[in-house]
Amino acid sequence: MKKLLVILMALVLAACAAKGVRTGEDSHSRNRAKLHTELAAAYYSQGQMAIALDEFTKATELDSSYAPAYTGLGLVHAALKQDAKAESNFKRALQLEPENSEAHNNYGTFLCVRNRVDEAISEFMTAVKNPLYATPESAYLNAGICALKKKDIRNAETYFQNALRVEPNMRAASYQLAQLYFGKGEHLQARAHLEQAMKNIDPTPEMLWLGVRNERILGGKDAEASYRLLLRRKYPNSDETKAMLAE
Image (cartoon, rainbow, N blue to C red; front, side, top):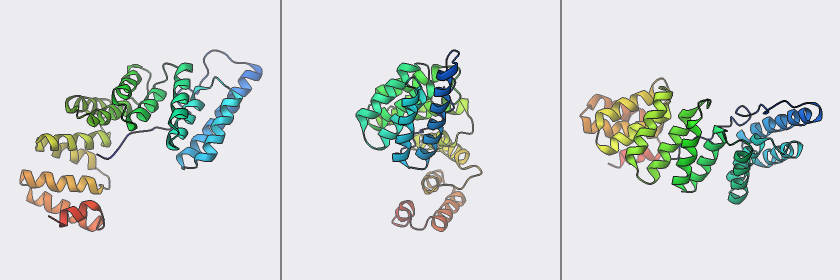
């Protein structure tokens, strides 16, 4: 299963506002910490981890109570495989802001990638309990993907459905359900969710290969042929095309 875990760099948007009134030097330090965090987030998104690490660190030096900077440090250290430092920073962020859903989501992602599945799902569920969380669909999606790691199909299905209930156009959740239903032998459901996942986008080779196999079982010869043609034409060197041609 390809990891589709969502790591949102919304850490500068979720919980950037200070709690309570800050004045004078404190307010100035918070503003500078926020600017360094925003800059670090941009470098992180570009894969420039060394600079991101430096900027997040500067933010914590300017304001040691600024939770988003610690979340950012957690993400950078996780990317660098420095797990102890990553976990320490995620926990510090949550100590500062226990109701920061984005921090719970990011920490849960960290845990799930490291196969600490039950702990991860607990973090995702904590994230979605906050009625002010702007993107609960992300935590539901991650919970579903994590549940699949321990072959908990029933709960994974529920989590993916919850993601779509919150955000009906979430393609990643639709694709996950398409794969799940294909595996369960519910091929009409798989077709419906795959079509939703591919709506108005360039389909990935994984999507097209799933379509080929699903339509073959359903007897949809025209649809199968269409998926085959697209897969060969758009992704001639992909593993999926090679698997199709090897049949």
